[in-house]
Image 1: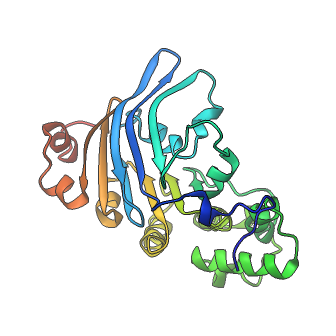
Image 2: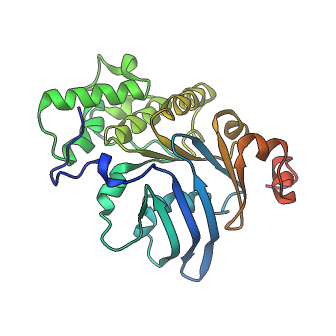
Length: 267
């Protein structure tokens, strides 16, 4: 069953090509502050790509350019291109709502809505016009299965989402994002507020989801990047210093600054 949208556009035809994410000479300013400086990268589809670097280096800022969350920031100016699936997502005429449907986001702190577990997951399908209970039931179950929590909550779907543990809430937020049937999943430090057991579940989930989704994750945990990432990008002061396979970044970095950060000399 495909999620249908009232205007007959679907996530299957929004992107015309593979869902690689390509930035070309991307610059971003918050007022006079130059937050991203000539960022050029190619994030490959159906891989896990981690962004690492010190606080304030531009990781989360770049992540938010991929679904235009920075549009909501007053004084934000962007030049250059962000091309996803063959579309320049900052071009005139882009439907930002459809973009965000296709490029889902999970935030650092779990943020379930103050409603039932079921209604959290059904929120996006209802927004896109799904009303039949059978269809919603199917989407909710499928999304919770993908988020590896169906067995934990299937008998209490009508309970409030805020009664869940922190780790369960974060997986519910992932299920909520998946219910919109995105092609790309952005994760901004999704385990930083979680205990080690919950962190391990989220990491395992990322490895499973990459079979069907392009995943980009911001993390301060270099061990986490090493465990789950196919590619890693190292940022410093708004600059993309190095982008390579995770093995190369951690075992044989090309830039001395990357090596210094990986070895703990700063950061």
